[in-house]
Length: 345
Image 1 (tube, rainbow, N blue to C red):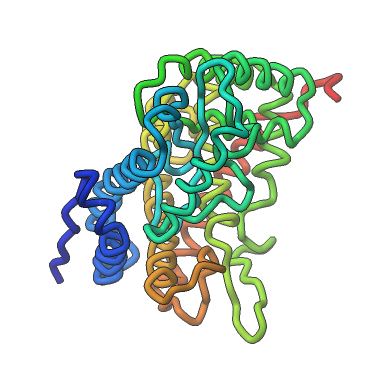
Image 2 (image 1 turned 90 degrees about the vertical axis):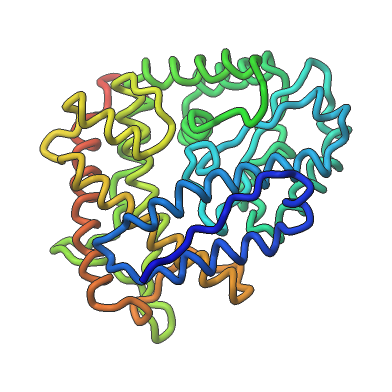
């Protein structure tokens, strides 16, 4: 069945008026795709176009809600999936702000909070971990950012390490030359630290893939149902592993697909071939995106990353198990590559 990808709307005024309708159109078109789990060609077209729409919505919302004075003094930096061009219909609104010197967060906070509320009906959930510009850890001048990053690197507990890794996946959505030294510093710190790389491999990735000891999907009980946490047990270890390997090998791409391809060209994936890894990545994104769309159309804003076994056909269940084996192989690769440095704390 031929399915059309919705036209991207990028004109700010039209986005403001039609944000909710645009979100519905994208969700409905995604669920109309009846391709088998082995065929992600149409989904890839939808996904690529959707990233343009999501970023346009964010920029339009920021322009609509935030005063010209604050927009001049604070620049919007996308974080996480928005920065990597991997947003899905209910992805969190992760963002940072890099400001001119002496911009008090207390003065900016009301406008930032209005922006977050404004984006909700368009499918942007507030970040549950508060990875947003209203948090002082994600706000400040370039000097304040550099001071914070260096202090975290000097005391690299796991919470500080996670912050540094999250800062890698960042992209200015408007002209922000003051962000460049921040991005360079955090990459240099992580790439040069065997201890921080060990932390991500063994504290952030090891044991997180949802496979049983003897193989098969690690379904979890939820009442009478069996569910699978597709973000935490599939996509997160895959995306984190590709980011870690990219930092280690000097790959500067943000998108996971491009990171995987660059690493494959360098021979950095061991026995894992590029096609196998990309098929797993596209499958995981597609599975999660469909769940997001289903939940959004039903008005459900919780448990959007839990896939119910009863809702998956045998073909989708078999594909999930197959691709989990690939993610598990990548997990083993990074854990083997990054052992704990001698003498580290």
